[in-house]
Image 1 (cartoon, helix red, strand yellow):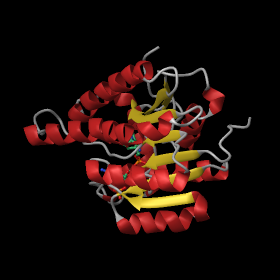
Image 2 (spheres, rainbow, N blue to C red):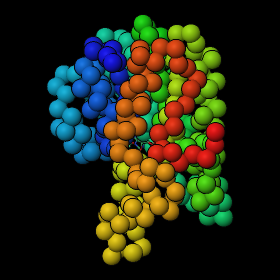
Image 3 (cartoon, rainbow, N blue to C red):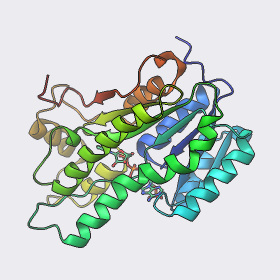
Length: 261
Ligand code: NDP
């Protein structure tokens, strides 16, 4: 199936690691022009070198929670991409592990700001460019926690549910021109889990054992964590003209972790 990305312009926030990096790589492979951002300069340089996209790749430092930086990123993309944007992938972010007892008011504020404004600021800044594209799309990277909250990730779960509501509303407000969809992730082997592995209490456990135990503990029917390319493929599908009649939808990419029907 031709996903129709050749010559199209895409933005992937948090495109320097994990799922964002895999998404950028697949988009470049499909012939798209791709702009990525992240906060850390060294990670950005490494991603730029690894992606090797030549003039089809724009890599820029930008904190998606900083309105001025997001505006500057959008301006750079407008100049580089010919004033249009076909796909915005809002992927930047991370989860917070904490129970209600361990979550301070300030933690709540930070988490709600991260989850909401990592969607709101890029959508506002890139909307004029999306408006000028022929068949534009937004894909929000979200988590299954939105539907299946975990007490040990209380504020992340609550914020994820709110983001799902936001994206659903936008799929109506922006219709019929811009499609808005989301993916709901389970556990994907990327930066977040690699950082948690690095600080595992039992350092005698090797990588395969630790990840295997994690998949078992979580009861993942496919018995493993996902690879970043697996959600990336779902993002490419939802963002492409191949999904032209899909908006306001969420696609679960979790190895079957959800218990809902
Ligand atoms: P990674 O840590 O591998 O990648 C996160 C990316 O986001 C990096 O490029 C990071 O770069 C960037 N980033 C983080 N904060 C900001 C910011 N404020 N502004 C700009 N860029 C930022 O994680 P994943 O690939 O796993 O995560 C991708 C998304 O998927 C995240 O939103 C995450 O919460 C979500 N998710 C992941 C799950 C998983 O199991 N992996 C499960 C559920 C959701 P830098 O730090 O340099 O800014």
